Image (cartoon, rainbow, N blue to C red; front, side, top):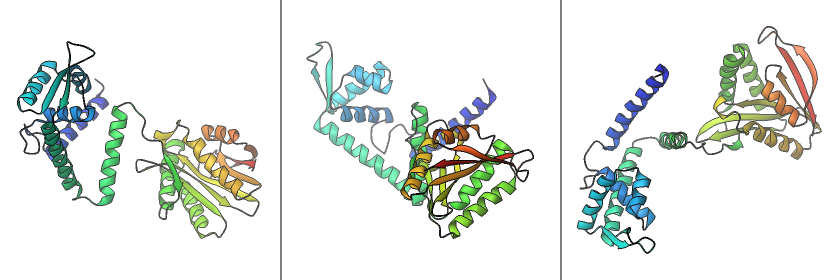
Length: 304
C-alpha cells in the first residue's frame, strides 16, 4: 500500500473515532432510547419510503439479511411495523410503519436534531456553516459526485487581501514568481479600490470556499482592463474560467466599452487559449525580468 494513502487512511480513522465520540455513537443505543443506530436507520428508511420490502431495505442499507430479519421481528412484536402480502409478488411482504412506529421514529429524529443543535450552539455561526460545508464536501467526494457548481457573486469588502495572497501563493508555486509579483497584485488592487473609475470584481464560491475570481477595471470611457483572473487548481477543467470570462465580458458590454485588454505571460497556456475563445488577440510582447528572469509579458486585446 502506498504510504501516502496509508497515512490518509489513518487520518480518516482518527476522525471517525473523534466524531463518533462527539455524537455518542459508541453506545449500544442512541439518544437514551432502547434502539441501536442500525435499528434507527431501518426505521428512518421505512418512514421515508412509506412502504418497501425487506429486500429493498437490504439493498438500501447494505445490511446482512439475517440481522435485518431479527430487527423486523422485534419491530413487529412491539407493534411498530405492519406487514402485508405484496400484490405483485405473493412471496414478498410489503412493510410499513404503524402509527406507533411513526411516533417512535419522530421522537428519535427530533432527539437527534436537538442533540446536534446542542453541539452547533456552542460554535460561532461562521464555524457552524463551515462545518456543514465540509460535510457536504465529504459526501460529494465519497459519493463520486461533484460539489455544487460554484456560484459567482460580486466582490465583498475585505477580499482584496485574499486575492493578492492567492496570486502570490499560486504564482510562486506554479511559475516561480517571487513576492515582488504579490506586491504588484496588491498595489493594483489598492489602486482599483481608490479609483473613481467604473469596475467590478467577481468571486466564484463553492460551499463557502473561494474557487476563483476575475475583475474589470475601467481605464477610460472606451477602455477597460481585465485583471486578477485566477482559478484554484481543484476547480480547473470544469468550465469555471469560461463562466467568469463571460460575466466579465457581459459587464464590459453593459458599460459600453469599445475595447478591453489584459496582460499575461507566455506560460499561462490554458488562459491564453481561453482569451482567444473570447476574441482576444495578441497585440504586444515585452520582457519582464522583475518577477522572473526570462519572462515575456503579453498584452491581449478584444473589441467589445
